Amino acid sequence: ILIKPAPGLTITGHEAGLCLDSSLTLTSSGAGTNKDYTWFLISTTDTTEIQGTGTNKNSITVRPGNAGTYQYQVEAADNDGCIGKTTALLSVFENPTVTITPEKSAYCVNEVAKVTAQGGNSYSWTLYDQNKTNSIGDATGPEIILPLAQTTYFEVIAQDVHGCKSNPQHTIITAKPY
Image 1 (spheres, rainbow, N blue to C red):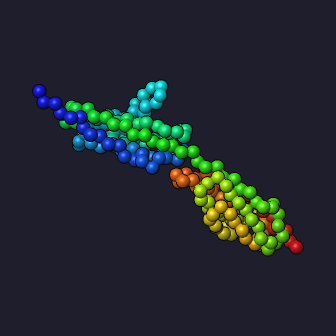
Image 2: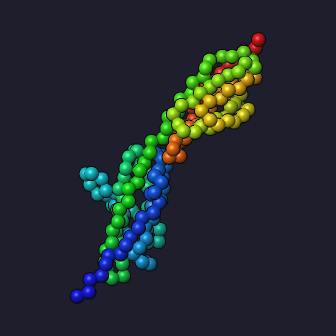
Image 3: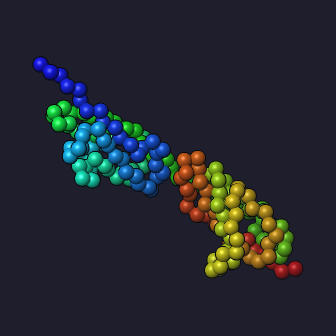
């Protein structure tokens, strides 16, 4: 009797994790050419088969609806009919929530305004005129300090350590004439 090993399957694409409301593709290999792969999502209560994509269904695109850790399993048989299986964990991260805090809601024209953002690790700002029709500048960092030439619409997006981005938040600061 000859005992052959099961194929050594691998799953790639899960290593960095995923931000909520995003999708990514998991890909498996190791069973040989022209072999069909079967995918499963394993939870604490049940196992659900997921339809694969690609020529041999060796890939799946996932878009989990909640943050947390998800376990995916793939199975495939090699040319000898030996079935291999492997699992991979995918971390799904919440998107950050950014808040904006202006030092004051109104300033005199050319007075130095200060606006601070919190909730992320990096920040990308866009400044617009009061009607948000024309961009008047961009900035990065948790704080903007600048002389206010006109009433300004401040918009910021925060990014966390996983690369997940917040929804844009804004505030309008009025520039009063002297």
